[in-house]
Length: 239
Image 1 (tube, rainbow, N blue to C red):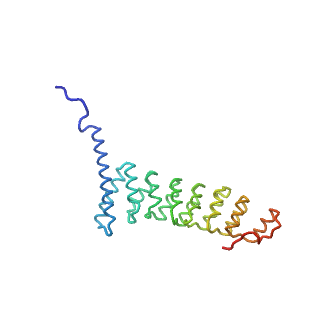
Image 2 (tube, rainbow, N blue to C red):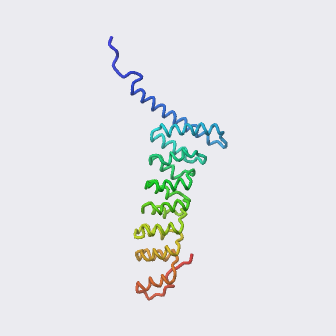
Image 3 (tube, rainbow, N blue to C red):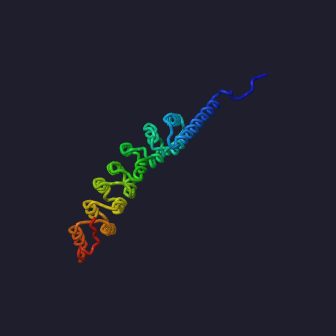
């Protein structure tokens, strides 16, 4: 009798299924071990086992598996550096949610990600709560206008005077950047006055309503507009 047609049990299709099953099993194992680490005081052995399983998923898992692992591990504050950096440098579907929420990434990590030049990662970093001043400074030095608009809208971001001036120096003619600067809670006097000189009249009024300028600058603006109103009738707040 001739042999039955079909693929052998150990053929390419079968091996592919076995590999897929093995990868899924590795993910399930890693997620289960991570759940165990959420105990109040996990042992060093339990941590080592869980993070070893995570490394296997990062090394061998497909994008969907790595994304699922990243979502599960984001809240961990004692994450090994190699795992954190691997997730932060992965594909956007994996890295961006991790970068947005992970507390493990420090200032140096975030600055390096900014300088990598990836706009999607830059805008994700720009929106992080309580963004440190060195990271904001890196963004204002190299990122594009869309990223800086996000940064300026982030009310909890710490943006120092030099970084605000950098926004103005690089994109001072961009109305969205002007609006973002005006929307900040505080502006240094030098930034306010430089912005006042370049902003459209409507934005100038918004600026004067929120931020301080010197009386001399305000009076000069009135003179150029041909106004007869004294400068002190403009809303000027000392901050």
